[in-house]
Image: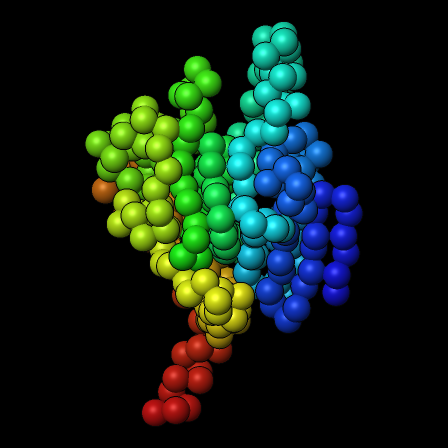
Length: 256
């Protein structure tokens, strides 16, 4: 099933939903319409019980170059309340990727810069092509990568975060893996095929176990060890009572 609009391409094949930012002439730069479209598409995938994983990508040569020029001009003359609403809208998108039950994978080709890099890092996983470039160039125009800083700090060390945030330089896909910003680098020519093979792995594991694991992982990262273990106890009990676990145990003993 495929359904498109001006800025978002949405398709479902089996348990895989593909959401594509469709502003290639603007390097898929973020504006109000694109951000709203991404939220709608991600929620739609999450509400589809058949969907097991979401692949988020950008049309054309780049994943996402951050805010577009029109948006930058808009925020430079906006009021405090208008800028607050605009910033919160982007924050909601970052949080949504982690709040939905299904894994959201950023499939990065070309550049993922500024808010676009933050968008990729806000996903559960990042798969990068050999051509991918990551960076936060905001300081070059006197801006602060404020919200993406929080996401970056969860993914890499303080020293590496400081370097990326204050120098505004780009790093390669291999460097992104070394920094903890990407899971792996896929072959450039076979990127789509390797992406499909990776995504289909989520169709062979329990959807309820993935959902519970995802929620617990993000809820416990700022907890004390004791509180995290207590949360783990609660989820452990829920998992034991789930249909997927009961069927899994039954299947295991049948094989034995």
